[in-house]
Structure formats: C-alpha cells, structure tokens
Image (cartoon, rainbow, N blue to C red; front, side):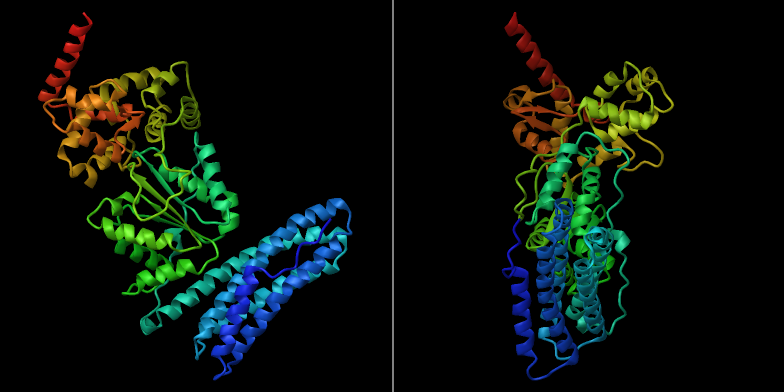
Length: 522
C-alpha cells in the first residue's frame, strides 16, 4: 500500500499566487480583514498535510477499514479542493479593494468557519479509533459538502455585488431561485436510459460539456433533460449550481439575460449581461439548461442569441444544455460529438411500458394502436390518458373519426394537445421563411414513407426546387432523413392530411407519377 504523493496541487498553486497578489496590493494599507484572509489561506494549505498524515496512519488498519476509508479520502480531497477554490476567489476579490464592505466581511467570516469545520473533521478522524473512523466520515462529509456549496453561492453573490457596486444606491433585487430551479424528475420516463447514462457520464468528467437536445415537438426533450438534472450523481457533483431556464416566452438574447439576472437577484441594468457571466464563472462546477431555446434562436435576434451562447460556452466551469425543436444546432458553440442527432421515436417496448404506467390496462390490440402513434411520447401519453376510460377498440374507432383531435386533454397547450404542438412547428420562423415548405409537407403525407430525396423533383413538377423545401422540413424536424429516404411521423401525417390537405396540382402530379410507374411495370 502506498501513500499518495504530497506534491503541490494546481489549486494550492492558485492560492499561493492569489496570496502573493493580495500581499503586494496591500503593502500601502494593512487591513485586518485582509490579514485574516491571508491567515485562512495559509491554514487551507496546511490542511493538505493533515489529510496526508491521517491517510498515512490509516494504512496500518485492517484492509476492510482501509478500503472504505480510502473511498472517503477521495471525498476529503474534493472538500479541500472546494475550500481552495473558495479561498482563491476571496483572495482575488480582496486584492484590488482598499475598502472592505460588510458583505465581504461576512464572506470572510463564513470562509473561516468553513475552514474550521474541515479542519475539525480531518483532525477528529485522525484522533478517533478505527471503529469510529468510518462512521464519523459517513455522517459528516455530506453535511459539510452542502455547507461549502452554500458558501459558494454566497461568495458568488458577494462578487457580483462588487461588480455592480455603481448601482448599489438602488434597492437590491430579491433572488427568486425557484424560477430557475430544475423541474422534478418525470414520473413516467421510458426508452432513453442508455442516452441518460451517456450524458451523465459526460457531466461527471472533469472537463465541461455542451449538449444540444434536438427533435420534433413532443419527442421528449424536456423530459430527458430534467431526468438528467435530477440524477443523483449529477446532483452530487453540481450541488445547488444547477439552473434551468424555460425560454418559451423569451424571444431575444437580452430577454434571456434579464430572466436570469432577475431570478438570481442581480441588477437589471446595462451590466446585467456581464453580471450573469461573472456569476456563472464564480463556481467550480455549474450547469445551465436552456429549455425551449428555439423561441429565442428562431427569431430576428438569432445572431445575438448565438453570440450569447458563445459567451456561456466560454465559461470554463460551465456545462451547457439547450433543448430545441428542430434538427439544427446553434452556431458558435463546440457541441459534444457524442450527442448530435435529434431524438428519435420510442421503441414499441418503451411505448407499451409508458402506456401501462398511465392507462394501467391493455389487451392484445394495444401494440397495433401504439404503432399508429409512431413512438411519439406526447401522442402516447395523451392516448394512454384516454385509455383509462376507453377500450382499445373504442380508441381505434375514435382515432379513425377524430384523428389527432383525439390527442388532447383539458386546457389545451403544447404539452396537452398534439395539434397545438404540431402547429407551433408549422408556424416557426424557419417554416414561415419558405412558404412552400408546408405545401410540400402536405404532399409528402400522401407519399409512401421513406421516399427517396432524389425523387421529389420528378414526382412534383408543379413545385420546382422541392429539394430546398425538403431541407426546411428536416431543419424543423417535421420530416426525417434516414439514409436518403424522407419520411414523417404518423401523427404529423394524419394532422396534415386533415387540417392542410395537399393542393390539387400536387395530387395530380403524384397520381400521374405512380400511374406512369404502373404502365412501366406492365
């Protein structure tokens, strides 16, 4: 068994550098609070020696105790790294300040208490017998981690307050963190467990990641991201530094910044953007999810919205998610290459599991009914709601009569009506910019699924440049390209044929095309 190396860590090197900067900047004015910060920094560097000494003593314990303690030692190191991170931030903030305000005084006192707590924990474990050692670690590490995490938020707010001190004469804006708190984990979630594991693995790495979650309306993008944000492993790493902002009603970069600044309690003046970036930069690990991001991105402000994303991506400690209708990733960000394709439909097994959790009953025809929905989670959920009171055969008849109008409940919204969800995609800026894109979608719904992309110009001579309109449908995730074969989900097909039937000229073109094929066969 070997004792870990006692060489200096990069975090300790940062403390040393910040301490030197603080000392040099304070020669002309010795402030007792700066002196206290220096003493705290020196104590934090000394705590590594304490932890090392404890580990060296524990190697003589029996193997079971040693193994469990070794696992806890990793958590000790994480606590020390967090403490070093906070100390470096306080030192850097103090270096250029001649006057220490009350908020900073409180932050220094809180940091001193955190150092006391860590030191007490480490020394108590060194003094206790081996039978008590692991028990103490189990009961104290979690609580201490949470308290340090809370201090991280506190120091971040102090730092941002300093940044906007020119506006300090105005009343402080109360923070409303509930507005950017992640929603709870979905009660019903099936079919994407492997994808969740892949993304969680990315988040648990030391480097940050930027993940775009794309796809059609109702495909389950928000359910996926909230499942990830509520994963216990993610919560253990990021603590309270997980923010979720719905951009559904935000149509510009400034609207996103103002929403974040308001929720965080930052000043909403000309410095709001800088304050938000500074706040996010103040954490060792932070995670930001921008849900329904297509509202802002698919607008006249796209250039500024992408510039804002670029700024977020430049924050070295920030992992970033966006969920968006469509299949195009915003420019300006180096998105992870592990998650690039839009979300696909659920398998029939996952659809059946979802049905059973909601409807609580099934018969031999339920798979046939589910196949009509093409694995679209929103459609499955809404149909299963109806399945609580109607039999499968009754649902077949109702769907034949009403089509997608059946798939809604209560006060209609995009989350409770499939038709409203599809209409939102049809009315997107991407679709509106090419008026013939909707016309082509209607014609596509008459064609067999997986029609070759190269055939559209021959099939639809009345609609020149149809390939361009196909690309628009792909960008809006109203159609899917599988190896050069174009198709659309069955619920979208049913909706379009009922609400926006093909134009007569297009019907005639398609009829003539297939009639000609029949003549060639004979």
